[in-house]
Structures are given as C-alpha cells and as structure tokens.
Length: 338
Ligand code: TRP
Image (cartoon, rainbow, N blue to C red; front, side, top):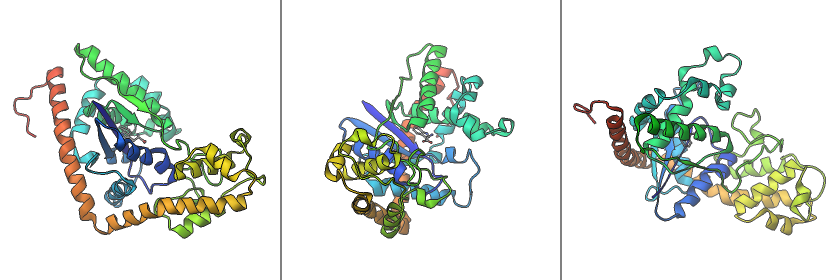
C-alpha cells in the first residue's frame, strides 16, 4: 500500500509559498484511494536552530491549525506532533550509528545553516537529515512530498535504508520516493521574482501569510513588483519577466486552472486590471482558511484532541517498526516498556 509522510517545522507563520508548494498538495493527496497519510509537525527539527522556547508550543498548535484549516481531514490523514512519538528520536539514534559524517557534511542545508562557523554548529543541526530519515522510515513511507530543497535529504534517507539492509543482511526498509509537485512548487517573493517567497525575508510585503487579513492581501498584491508591459498572449513571452510569471503562477494555482488559461483570459491587459482580479481570487481562496484557523486557535481543545488521537495512531505504527529494528539489530527487548 502507498504510504505518504510529510512534515513542516513550527518555525513561524505559514505563507502562500508553503500553502501552494506543500499544504495544498497534501490536501489533494487525500483523494487517493488505498493510501495512508501521515502529516507531522516536526518540532524536534525546529529546535536545531535558535528559537523562542516560550513560543514553540503555540507555534506547533498554529501549524496543526493551518493543516486542519487548509483541509487535512483527521479521518483521512494521521495528523500529529513529532515529539509526541518518542520513537522518532530512538530510531534516529540507531540510524546515526550507520550515518557517515562525510555525507552529512556535504548536505547543502547544513552548509547554509551552519554558515562560516561550522565548528560551532550543533550536533543536532548536523544530524537533522538523520532525524528526517527516521521520520520517514519509522512509518515505512513509500512517498514523501517535499520541496526541491529537501531532495538531497531524501537521497540520504534512501541511502540509509539500503545501508541498513546491507549491514544487517535483510530486506527490511524499502526506498521512499520523493514527490516534488504541488500546484506551484516555487512561489516567488512579491518584491523580487527571482527569490523564493520566504518567512525569513526582511519585509512582510514580500509574502502573503496565511493569517493576513483580506485588506492586507489586497494591499500586498497591489504593491507587488511588476514590469510595465501588459500580459502577453502566450506563456513563452513571460520568460524573462519573473514577477509577471510569478503572479500568473499564483493566480493559476489558487484558481485551480492552468497558466495557459490565465494568459488566455488576461492577454493584453495591464497589471492595473490583473492585480485586482488576482487579489479577488486570493481573498476568496484564503479568507475561509484564515477564518477557520482563527476559530481553531480560539478553541484549542479541538486541535489537541486531533493531535492526541494522531499521536496514538502514529505511535502504534512506530512502536511496531522500532521493535522490528531492535530485533534485526540484535538489541534485547526483554524488559522493553512502552
Ligand atoms: N526538512 C523538512 C523541511 O524543512 C521537514 C521535514 C522533517 C520532513 N521531516 C520530514 C519532510 C520528513 C518530509 C518528510 O521542509
């Protein structure tokens, strides 16, 4: 059976890039039959970089609320928090014994995040991809929807799966496949069409957050950078016009139509016409999500119940795998307490 696993870090507010690049895709994957889905809030990953410990648990609930508000249905998907299932950290340790430091050192994300002072980077940041491998292998996920930037980590996960099998002479872990898709895998900054929309960008005007009010959405789209040409009548002519391409991509993804259809509808029009139409689509699509998110956050009991149930289901699966891995690795389970 197909099993999907993915996760997001509770590092800060979600924006349109996270929504169109990941979350919307996760929701759409719920239509697939014969598929199990696990969507996790990966709080143990979030603490590998400096963070505000007074805000972490609230941020975790907010991400869970965003999952639910966007349409992740607890009846169709297991929704849980990574730290609620201790087996993640346990399997990570076991996998750490077969992870090569040289490979971890070559991870682009580690190099980016560690920056110039690698000597002072934490072991946690270094081992980040091993924890991610544990997340995936713990549930024997077959498909992992991720962004382009996480492909290298998926490669490492596949590597670890085969190292494990070879080292212990088993055919236990299979190879999880990355799924790089979503209606708009790369949503760019509203101020610079060559940079990804990001939560770390200085100006809030570069992104649309899932908690923005309709007024803010309208304002941000109105002020979005564009060029002075009208929209062309074919997609090819959008090349070399990254801001225009980005807005067309966003429109298409939100409206659930192709970019060609957008172009057809707006060919020859100025941005003065296109932007209000885009703002309408954005508000129409995002306002109900924002509203639902706020409702959920006003009454956290509902989110907590879902997370509690999710953790319970996830834990059953996780404990099963960990037990089997203990056996294969020759660890004694005699007095194991769960
Ligand atoms: N590293 C991923 C990211 O930053 C988040 C993540 C953690 C993840 N564990 C995962 C994604 C397992 C997919 C599967 O986007």
